[in-house]
Image (cartoon, rainbow, N blue to C red; front, side):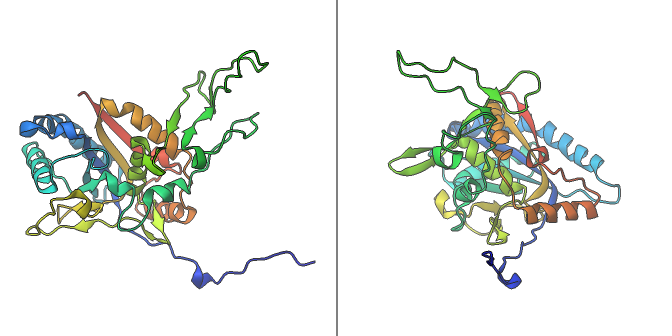
Length: 320
């Protein structure tokens, strides 16, 4: 008896596309609609608080590289156009540039949060859902549907459901983190909600997609899932956010958008969101060929690229 064997021509397999890489991608912020208020006071205050951390991150990156390697560092800013009505792109980007310039900062790239759902026809959010690999805790039956069906993902074992009144059932047990360091920190994350048969993606899930894009880890049929669009100095911006590419390059001299490692400088209100992001990314299986390619390139430059995706991400949180 001959076992079923699948034969595939090597030429038919998509080749993993290499993309330009910086050593570090620094996110200068992620603000909401209320931050674009009269006078843009909140934006100016934000850049005032961010600037010292940016300069420190640049120095730290340079110190970690071999002396003969010149640091490649790019900056980016994420605009929340997914849930909120915000001013038009020309107005917002002009104010962001002014506030950055006032504090000796340059914004190399601006990205739309809705671009983390779909970018130029590529369904980025769905690509990441397809790569979720939940880690089922010990002694569970698998009765709860997986994250790709339920839209909920956790880092351990949930508390069992409460039995109906008067019905015999198991005693209450607390949730338990997988591999806790002493005591558990259990996290249960909603990836999306369902509104009229349409998925509404959570902030935490889109922020996870955003990190993967910045790390250069998302591919679509072997090609880069997102390509920054270079904006010419005299090119007019559309007045609707949905007419902009997912990522636009403002600085023609910018280092590459994607990087071996990322740093996000965010307000403290994002602490819980980023905890959820790290929980999600710990259960995303990035393409092995992409991980290996980035590892080889890093080694050739004398750059240590951590195996785990979450170890490639760092943060600084500033007070509101």
